[in-house]
Image (cartoon, rainbow, N blue to C red; front, side, top):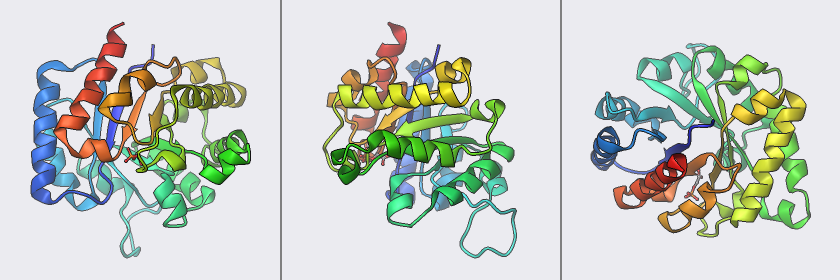
Length: 257
Ligand code: PGA
């Protein structure tokens, strides 16, 4: 059985104080009542240490939004895997569409980061997803296939145990437009089949595939009840306790049934 997972991607948002308050409120709620769902917060890099201390002991995990693939050294502006581990990170997000399309990150770069992160002891939330023009040209599966193949290149079955996949259609990120439950389920089922082809049935059945793209309290339940949707990677709605907690609660309900 796959344990549902809800991760908050704060992107380049919050201040130290608002971030601390947000993380504190979520940690308190989680430590009191919501044990069935795995929860992670991914704040901006400068706040990782403080947010890590804030959520310590609550069961909420800490994740980073990026990492560099080289060992510590002369790489101005970059952050090493060791540093993320040092401040208590368990996860790192890789392959996010904003890094692919705004920062120009390539599949090759993502793959190098993937290897470095996993070898260094981080778990990876690996994002894949098509742009609107690609969906309209009926290329969704082709894009997912390529991103999956290139991103996971060289990883064995054991490494896959530390990878969570996030399907994030680019046209649904931060736009308020969510993939329909059917569209999400179709993409997730496709990705799971590809894992079966590439690895084996056990990997396909045990790998969690999250949905991301305008997940909100109003649509969380219908998305999370799809058979192949194992959680959510939440951007905008993770920045407020009153919108993030109901999404976690929706996941909790699914786990219970
Ligand atoms: P959104 O972002 O929930 O604001 O659409 C999701 C993401 O980019 O991970």
